[in-house]
Image (cartoon, rainbow, N blue to C red; front, side, top):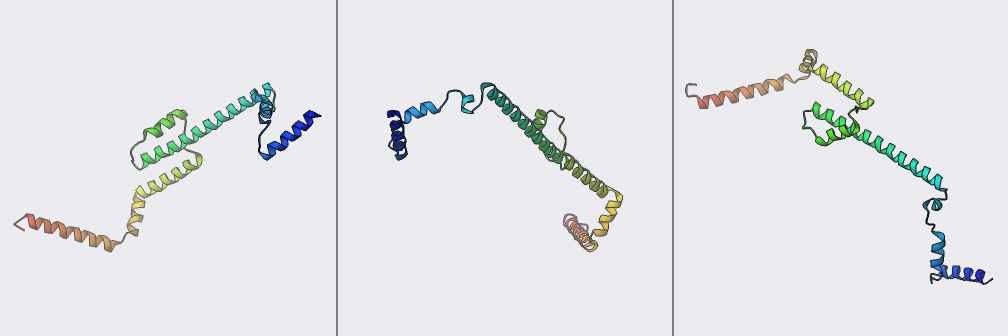
Length: 160
């Protein structure tokens, strides 16, 4: 009976915030074993920890693979546009195991870009570009360049 009264009064005092009896309940409520804290047996807890570690390793591997794919794309773009190489990208590709390639959708995009560039580089592509040019503007620019060269030559040469 005294125990019942003490626990009721201590709970009421705790609710009021005046303290009292707090140390006893803290010691009783915190088990020293993490498995018991999680509500599992020791074996279940160890199995759970193994699964957590394996999942983390899988996520890290997938993340490293994605980083390497992005680095591969950056390397490809740097080569395409003749930009300076990056050691960081090359290191990421090496860490992933050198079997990294562009993702399929990016490979399709790159293939389409290459086809377009090949078309532009061909003779027919150049002929199509000539049709799109403004001939009057080109003629004016050529005449302006010719007159500038002629004036520069006249200044340098006393015979002309």
